Length: 122
Image (cartoon, rainbow, N blue to C red):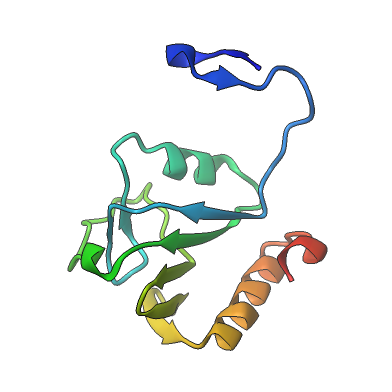
């Protein structure tokens, strides 16, 4: 590790790792899987640059629900949202309640469509 921006330690050398799935912390979550982040745009820029795009799972509290985040074209919606009230998956452009079993099947389908390694997402 070596000091990076703002003296935050960063890895030196080694292979680059590209995730198959990301847990994304939202400040607010909208009905389209749209989210408010912490203001830097880091997740959206990272997700836009990754190919294939990882499965995205927002872990939020129900109290962080908002009517809309006013998503912009560059914003990337979450595939799955998990709160203390349950699991929702992005279906037809909107979040829909899902059982854990159905959510797992949906995540597997997303991973297959994005050609993510099966052994790491199943």
